[in-house]
Length: 195
Image: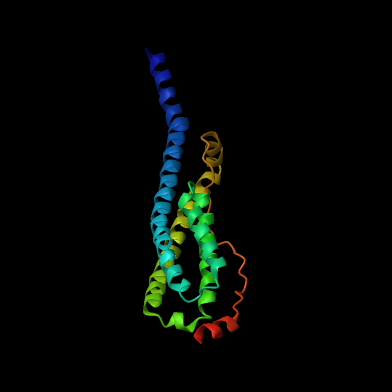
């Protein structure tokens, strides 16, 4: 009987020394990964808001900046890629592409003073500006969750268990530098339109 108690005591001791930390690691890693997914969903809502604003902005600009078809086409293609993205990485890449193209579009808009005086354009720009601010906040929150998770699975001895349970590093939502070429506007065409 005494041997059974000793064996039982050893089993309980080993459970707490070996198994309990593994269970604790696994549950914490799952919790942190789900926090990342939840935060990405929050950011996705705001990105969707920008996604929905873009067509209205393009329609407003198209009426004045007819010769800027290339940028409109690129934005439409980027929106399509964002809409069909299935992974966070694809959505991040598409969102960054849209952001870069919108920056180029805003550079183009500066060459059209009649557009900047439009009430509907200014309203859309205010909405877009607010949306961009919300995206920045959500991006920061998302990246903080990613940092916490990645640090958790990379530190010793968690990295051993992370490899065993196949927990992978999550990507940050970083702003990538998009090539921004100065838009070429032919002011002679604009003079011809005013006649």
